[in-house]
Length: 210
Image (tube, rainbow, N blue to C red; front, side, top):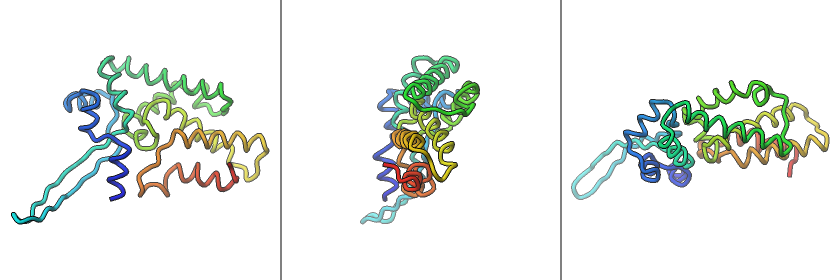
């Protein structure tokens, strides 16, 4: 199936995540309950039927899939332990990315990435822990999350108008390219409804972006 191939190619199963990170399943569960480690981004429920000389056999399985970037995050969690210290790493990396993007010329008047950045990061932390960004960004890590959110803000601000100036087209192109770099491909059944389709593919088509 295309979905299973997509998941196996782009994500770690829970066991693969544990093997790469040298962690136990008990530790992973503990960190998730503690609120410092993201939940899985996809959960696949399978009923497998096997027919052979010995007769028909069925087996129910549940497979959790995690963003591959979570292996490095799990190492951070293992080393820092406390929620405060771990959140501090997320906050620092998120804000540093926003500042770096501003230094590269990305701009927005949205309060979320300016005066309200602290409350914004706390909200993003919650989405991160729920596994949402493991699904919709390439790595699931703070850098891609911040880039995705900044790009979406810019694209939404600029695409209100049907016609843009040359300068605005350049800014929109940079924002779309940033989102393209940070955004995941999404599972086959999600793509037409995804932010990638709406904000990247359709925006490029509408404004004839390079």
